[in-house]
Every structure is written in C-alpha cells, then in structure tokens.
Image (tube, rainbow, N blue to C red):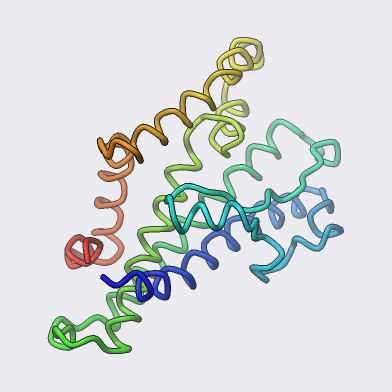
Length: 220
C-alpha cells in the first residue's frame, strides 16, 4: 500500500481512538467528583486538546507513541483507590466499545463484491474501519499492560490488596525500562514479540466484531 494512502487511512481512526480514550478518563474522573480535566479544557472530543505532537509522530512512524495524559487529582475522589481504578479502566474500555461499534458498522456496509482491484472511496472507508478496529484493540490491550504509566498499572494497584503496594512499587521502578527494551528490540530486529502478545487478542475480537473478512483486510 502506498505510504500516503496508508497515512490517509489511519489518521481519522487514530485521532478518534486516542481522543475517545483520553476523554473517557476525564469523563469518568468527573463522574467520580474530580473536575480537574474539565477545568483544564480536556473534557472534550476535540483531538487538538489531546494530541502530543512527538507522541503522535512516533505512532505514525514507529507504531508506538502517546497522547497527552488527562490530568487527574485523586484527592477529589470520595474513595481514591476504587475511583482511580474506574478512571483507569475507562480508557481501555472506551477503545473496546469503539472497536465493537466500528465492527458493527463494517458488517453493515461491507460487500466483498464491491472490493475490486481498482482503488475507490468505498475501499478507503472499508480499510479505515478495519484499521480503526485494529488500532482500538491495540490501544485496549497495550494500555492494560501492568506497567507504569499505562492504565494497567493503576488497575493492578487498585485490585491488589494494599499490603502488596511496596512490592508493586519496587517492580514498577524497572518494568517501564523492560517494556521499552522489548519495544525497541521488536522494532529494530522485527522478531514479533509484541504481535505474539497482541495478535491473538486482535484477531479474536476483531473477528467477533467484524467477521472473518477482518483477518484478510488487516494485512492489506
């Protein structure tokens, strides 16, 4: 696929996915009594408010990056431990729901007879939906990894009994460096470590949400 067409296809679903993810964190925090994100102008679906330029460029060219984290103040929560758990879950859950919604839309409009060898606007829309499903599933499973500063680290902290906090803190000091090392090794050596982790999740839920055609189209 031509690089320009590829970036044209992934830009709308990528911006929408990271925007919904960050908005969901802020929305859940607001529901739990913390107005910090709202006061900072981050309780919005405007992508410009959530984009980190460096993180976005890395997402484009290396497949790994970030958005601007939504500011959260746990001191405003009635039950900080429980409420922060819900706030952390909101991001990955929103991407999962978005993947499901895009899968339904794909099932409604997809027609294999219209997917010919000649490029068309219809094909671009179909591929945009497929990449949207894939991106949202990647964001879901990646953010559930129990490594700081990912959502999974806060989810794990909220689920573990408090007496394990010290051990978890010690592990989290080194876990981000291990993850970064794996990401760089995977990218430069192309050994497929991350795909072995994410792939089964993406294929399983992508097929459930969009049907068997999803598997073929993600490799276009």
